[in-house]
Length: 208
Image (tube, rainbow, N blue to C red):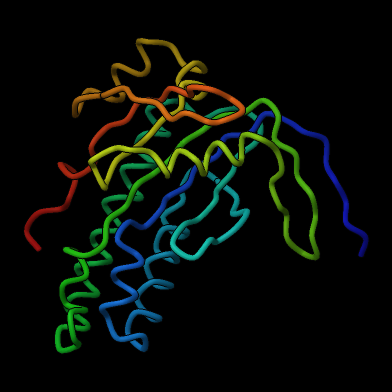
């Protein structure tokens, strides 16, 4: 099958990324960690209720994308909150299942989740074998958001390019559960790229 390049089109990118991954893989027995991480990534994929498609699984992250009509902003926020809550529920279950393994029972204390949401008018797709690879500058930018200087380890980050697709009323209603802060990254060729973010830790399920 020949590689086929598709015309660039508006695309919503979403990257749930597991924080603490490197330390976890170092400190937890590989036989156990090699079961836990795929389980958590599968949990994220199966929690996808907005019809995101998976472009790539990147070790500790999943690159989701969605083309066509954008979801309502409150639905998008609810999806991200669901990713986070179900991720923690899965970690609590894992901590119970692996309670006798070295440090594995501390999984909820060692790992976390950050979620990047970025919108672009120009994302291309290339078919590589049986997989669809996303192409374009904004794919790089979306990943660059993960390399920010925030002190928080768990957050929901929206690029300004995403926020600009929605009204102020939609956003204030959907993000009224915690403080929204602003920051930015600086890219050598693109300059300063602003974003908004919100701490996800208040959503950690209780009672576990």
